[in-house]
Image (cartoon, rainbow, N blue to C red; front, side, top):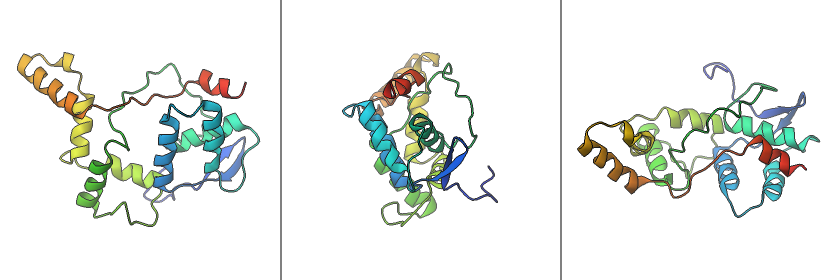
Length: 187
């Protein structure tokens, strides 16, 4: 998709049929928080995730959940094969823990108040988030969290990086649900 001339999608496709879904960024941050909530069993989570469908829930629940996952990750390809052998990327930010940094970066860079803006499409939010300059605190946190201290030869620099990483480490790592876990929900 080219965001310069194509509109952000309002629907997902499940088995060839389009379904209208929630698209506001706030709803997708809630979606992520629900997926990350270890207190909620997967079967209940699955039922709750289906609330993101606005005009009816697809019959194929498993495909419906995958379609929401594709929308979340901005993957617009229908029926694309998921490569679950690829390593899950390290989590380098949290919408919960880094909320203040994200909010202030949007105010500083784009003059957008995320509290009062009536609506912003999830894909627009993600595009703007990715485009934040490196000097913003959230981008600095992401950079430091992504560094592998073992790759740093200088002992003092490695200690400095490790100290920063401890100060900003995420409280809980988010992990991607595997195909087996999704399949178990439907068993």
